Image (cartoon, rainbow, N blue to C red; front, top):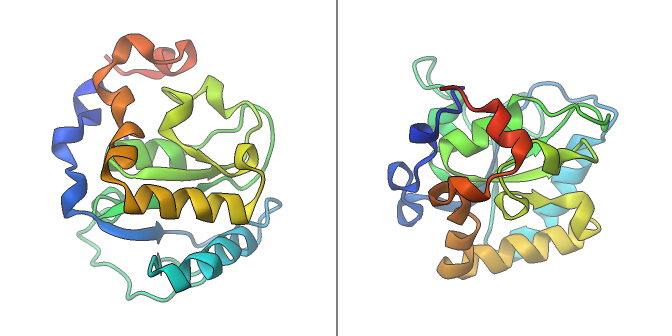
Length: 175
């Protein structure tokens, strides 16, 4: 996706129209990060709180496939949260997953590169599973954000403050 600043404006993605659920679009079910296991663990903790996992890919699928005319970004745009767990935990390996989330306007639940903060606009832009310490803490953070509109909005504050963006993220911008 394009990372041009105009595509990252929150006005394009109002949170009050988003579902308080986690979108998961993945078809590579066997990764070194244990992505499916992590997602399932977080989802199981959130289920009793009424925050479901909507999985559209082959992995943990529980939703009908979206129409071919609907892009991954269009799917993610309907949700407050989405999974952005990488295929590996290698340093500097940050794929489109997190950037798709930013363009779609949802908050990515991230696990992967230990130096991901070098590649995202701000530390508050993601829910970092590693930094939080695991599935339980991540589920608690998602539940807190889902219940608190102000806290959720704070996860998007970076969008209106390009001057606070990390140097690495600024270098990624398409002009």
